[in-house]
Image (cartoon, rainbow, N blue to C red; front, side, top):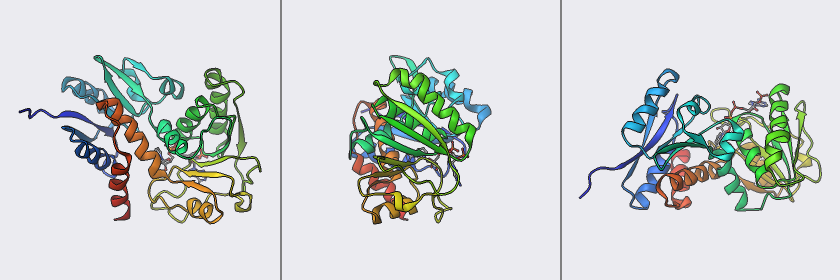
Length: 287
Ligand code: NDP
């Protein structure tokens, strides 16, 4: 008999609307793991105490979301390769008594994409240059993408990301990788040789569900794979438009599920069944 569950969870603020707890606990139940995932609202000034508390209570690790993804780094022992390159952590893992910061956002995206295609050698157009875009583009470059065009409204943010990709990231990527920045004004027309199109902006996120990317839809062809990071609602206008044009489409639930799969595997050693986790999220988003 053992009444002591293993503990994991999340530190964020706000936390109430984050559905990750439902998805992770569905996986724990499905795999008969006596583990818990506790969703905690932690303000910035309490992050240090929260991490000390998790260590004292023997947690196996935790996710951290906004606004803690950068601030948490000073409380950790070391970082995984991509978290180090991104300068952001969303998943902390206790390994041999050390607290290691990982970033599973980009890995989750990569897993979703790899279900359709190997990104090695691909030419990618990515809209956005915020945290999600940074995580996705670093992983794609490390996975051997040929080229990433960062299309962003804010020039400075876009340039900073392209410089990161062409600098430290390129040094650790397979030969030949390059990135370029394009300032986003008016409808963007996709180059004909684009293999993968990614919306990594917050356009389309609930409640702004009618929003549309400034994109020349006639430049979308059925040879392109189109991925959207927005999990709620998963059927964004981009997902609908790309489906209508015959593209292969990846929605934002896939990324959310797969980053959870990676986190659970880091903590428990068990690779969970993604379909159980996806069903838990679909239940929530359809309700
Ligand atoms: P950030 O605030 O860091 O970045 C937002 C990005 O969206 C910026 O590039 C911003 O451009 C762009 N943007 C926002 N509104 C517009 C607009 N009207 N027109 C053009 N560009 C716009 O957010 P994150 O990167 O952290 O998150 C982005 C999205 O990714 C969120 O909606 C989040 O839900 C989703 N996400 C999904 C995950 C998943 O697992 N499915 C995981 C993580 C995030 P600019 O720089 O010009 O302001």
